[in-house]
Image (cartoon, rainbow, N blue to C red; front, side, top):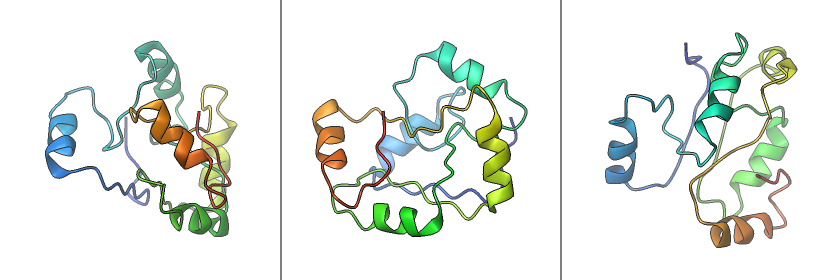
Length: 120
C-alpha cells in the first residue's frame, strides 16, 4: 500500500514504543491500532485508502482537536479535500482514528470539549 507523502501523523508516543511498532512488518503507519486484522485488511484493500487513518474533518476542526491537552495521539493532515473525499468514499474506510490506548485514556480524550471528532 502506498502511503501518501502529504499525510502527516504526529504522536507523543515515546520513541521506543514507535520503534517497536515500526519493527513489525505489518505496521503500515506510526499509529498503533486495536482494530482486528480483518477490519484493517478490508480497509487496506480499498484502492483509495492511502493510509489506515482517514479523516474528512476540515483543518479548523483538526486545529481544535490538536489543541486539546488530552489528545495524546493526534492526527494532522494537509491532504486537499478532494483526496480526503476519495478516501472517505471507500465503503471500507470507516473514517475513524483507532488506537491501542486503553479505554480510560480514550474516555478522557473524548470528554475534552475541543475534541469534536470522537474516535471509536
